[in-house]
Image (cartoon, rainbow, N blue to C red; front, side):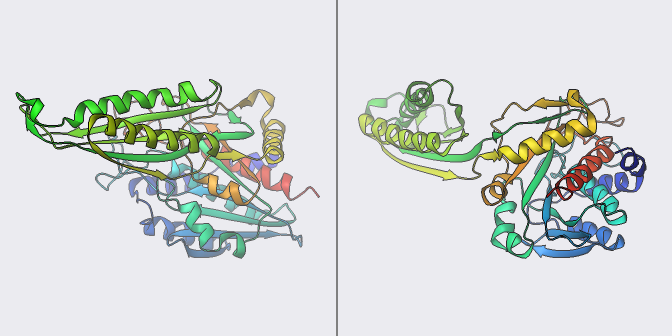
Length: 396
């Protein structure tokens, strides 16, 4: 891999692209400028480009040799509705929007790999470079599949990388099985009867009902499943009332539920529904319950995970690869893994020391207004992508 390393030492042009994308962040399915920049860059390297997939998705196609085998590599391209606290030169120029999760960096790593693969295709088969929109809540992976991604670009397996703050640069983490949780939202409305706060007996107060419901939710996982079954129910919004001396007519409860298995998710939804209506009935109120299932769990395939781990160990040494601790965060790469074998793994983004002067006062963590992607990852990520391609398409 020494030749690959030397080829990728100079990625200054891709670093500039990354910072340009960071300066002009675009939200889910609005990534028109970003998509045009990606497509234009790929075409400059004589890469076959397909645009407009799931509105703003881009797929580049690089072929080497005459083999019929194919592999997919994915980068997400959308930003978040966050106001950036950083004030360095490449900070967001779109108020209220920011690349606070490193999708600009993921895009840059895949572009750097595309440049190397197109110049020196040392593999036998096809590489599909997937630049996916709308990972942050829009389900862009699902929409690309609906738009014929796997029919138009038939691949044996698909792989994805996410940067990981807090993990040292040069280190990776990977694990088979569930690595990211399903993401689900709920909304409950409790309808009581308003009254003067000094005369509560003349009304039906929905707020104590909400308190009982929230408290009961905390026992669903703890008292219905073995302790090793991971799941979380978090109430994040309780909304009621406008005045201190008025009992409101209604109260709303919103929140999220996360699991690694559909079985536990089914139980959570069932018990939440039963508790909501049971408690409402006990207090003489009426309730409504909505439960929306968003991203499914991200579950890595064992064979492909073992493959990634071996490639990383061969390229960087076994001390550079750690066991990933699954997180309750969500990731729509899950949709790809439901349809094709593959693996989603993480690479260290460091601890924040890489940020330019004038960065925000907050930590360099994901979804934080002071975050910035570490540009040192671009050549490293590109080397990993190239190594995965050459290993996959060089093996029967």
